[in-house]
Image 1 (cartoon, rainbow, N blue to C red):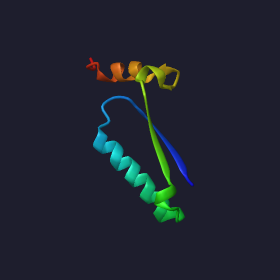
Image 2 (cartoon, rainbow, N blue to C red; image 1 turned 30 degrees about the vertical axis):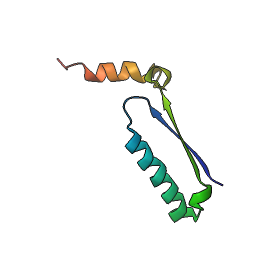
Image 3 (spheres, helix red, strand yellow; image 1 turned 60 degrees about the horizontal axis):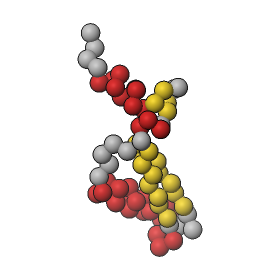
Image 4 (cartoon, rainbow, N blue to C red; image 1 turned 180 degrees about the vertical axis):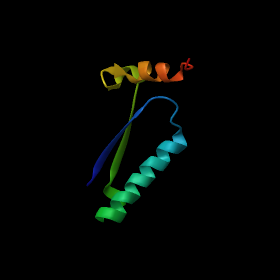
Length: 71
């Protein structure tokens, strides 16, 4: 029984997008590894951007910096 945990930042992922991720991951495991879709578990965790760090800073800070107009 495969178990896949997908982590994304919590910033507007829609219900439809989550459904597509679950369906796509399930189908990928079926197609590539021959796993039974009926026993494949996919969990999506949405993480606040303040709780996700890259390169020593939070995603919140990185995104704020990227949004600033360049001078």
